[in-house]
Structures are given as C-alpha cells and as structure tokens.
Length: 315
Ligand code: SER
Image (cartoon, rainbow, N blue to C red):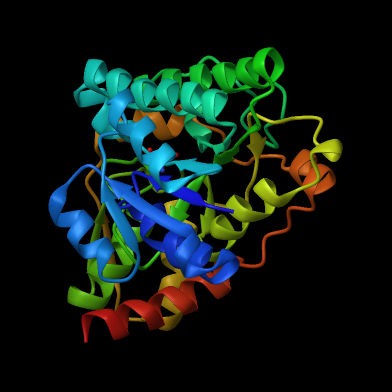
C-alpha cells in the first residue's frame, strides 16, 4: 500500500499522517501540500512533496513516481472562508477533486474525499438527519460537497473507481488549528480558556451541531477505506457522528474543570446562519451497519482530554 495525502498540512492531514504511518508503515505514506513552509514542517516527520492538487500534470507525476495506490484528498476551503470567496472555493475544492478522480481512474487508486455536514441545508430534516435525505445546501462549501459526493459516486458506478467518503461533522483536535470553518469555535474555545480564561463565541448559545474528536475521525478515515467493499451499500458519503452539542452545553462541560472560565457571545451572522442551516444531530446507522463505525469519544471524555493536551501545548 502506497498512500498519498493531498492537502496534508491542514487540521485533518497533520494528524492523519502519523496515524497512517502507524497503521501502514512510515515509508508508505507521502504528505503533499501546496505551501513550501508547510512541506518543510511535514518533511521533519514524514516523506513530503510540494504539490498543487489543481495542477493535473504535477499531480499525475507524483502518483506515477511514488507508485501511489490510495489517495486521501483533503484539499478544501471551509464553509466560512468559502462564503468570502465562493468562486475560489469552487475552483480549489472541485479542481482538486476532479483531478483526484481522473487520476484515480487512470492509475487505479482508491480515493477518500471527506464530505461534511455542510452538504445539508435548511430543507434537510434537522434532527436524526437520515443518511439519504434532502441535500440543498446554502453555502458554496456545501454545494462543492454535494457535487463531490455525486461525482464520486458517478466515478464509482461509471468507471469502477473505488471512491469512499464520510460526512464529517465539526472535528475537535489539538494539533493544527482548523481555519475558516463554522465549527471552529469548538476548538478555539479550549485555547482561549487555557490562555486567558475567557472566550467570546461567534455561534448562538443554543445552536446544535454534530462533532467528532480527532482520534475517532482518524479511525473513520482508515476503517472505511479498509472495509470490505461487498458490505458497502453506500459510498459517497456516510453520516458519522459522536456527539451533538450547542455552545451552551460545551461551555457548561468546560466549566466543570475550569470553574472560573468566562463565556460571552458576539454573534457572527454568516456563521450563525450557516450553523442554523446544518443538522442538529445526524443518524449514522448506515456507517455502523455497513462498515462497523463506532465512536469512542463522548463530550465529557473529549473535554478532559482537550484541556489536558492544550495545557501541555501552551505550557
Ligand atoms: N468543519 C467544517 C466547517 O465548519 C464543516 O465540515 O466548515
């Protein structure tokens, strides 16, 4: 198995690389990113190459040279950034995906591209959101994710490309920071509370969204790709979740460990509208049944582990 991770310098890639190294062997994992400073950082602990995934020629060359047979395509502008630059979001998110699909078809690679809760919209049922339901997103990020799911299924049915995907909710982690997402508040709060004991939240206190702790997200990435294809009735893309909470609930949990923590709200209307259009809680039964998905981290365990990790990181 030779695996390429494109967009490896982001929130997921930074932790997916060591997870893949542990699972499949260090020599078999290659991290690719667009920016030279990120490639330099990645190259300290992994094989790393500089690559613009929207450049089909350069992308093919890496696949050929490194004899890659599995790709994790993590290239994406997130939801809030996408609303600032919708055209650029389409160009980058869809450009990287189309190249990944064409290359996977040509070189016989299996391809994982995350989708998101952002693929849902206002007209989607908001509680226990089913696997197969209305998908009319209100953001460019979501439009790209739905298009990506459809294209990935198309390449599977039409050309037999082994495309697989999960709809990630907000991912909470203590490695690289997320950037430009609507769920970022649930990561940022830990840094601010540990640093200054104070956090101003851009999301309304009663706005529910699904979340996953990074170790569960990493297992989803490898367990789905290693799953028996005969058992997969769905491919692009599976609902996965571990917890659903509002800012109010998360902050009450943090307060149990940091009684002096102070929380205020300064609502960002763009993020608030996006959060409002997304599901409050997902139904991930299909993922559980078809490839054995089972999250290990709940709210209380995640909060304790995050506080511990961020205290060490900022010490
Ligand atoms: N975390 C992403 C965002 O908030 C959702 O997939 O944009």
